[in-house]
Image (tube, rainbow, N blue to C red; front, side):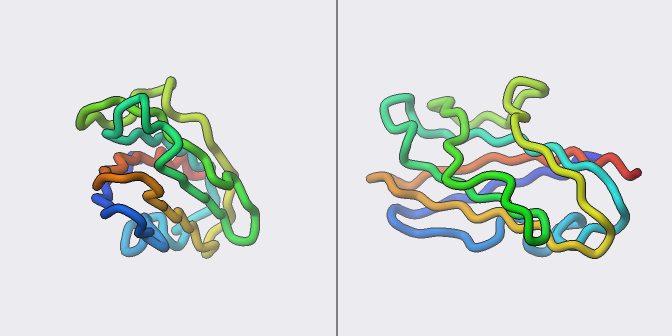
Length: 116
């Protein structure tokens, strides 16, 4: 199953959970998740987007910088799917996105969910 979305983030703000309200916010069944992310920021501002991913209490990524594209572009499999985790049913999946840059940015994300 593929779940996708995007988050537009103003300068200096954060979204506490980009997966809130989605099918995988609370795992519906045991499975494996693969995360793909890109941002529309130009290459010169690659460090302005930071993402933390938690699968339950397990930290999968801390201050991860997604690939910058300079344009609106969804993640490409397998190139942009660099993070993964196994998660049991009921575990909460959290993705925090921070915009540390000088302009509004859009984070594009996709999650591939393979039930066990």
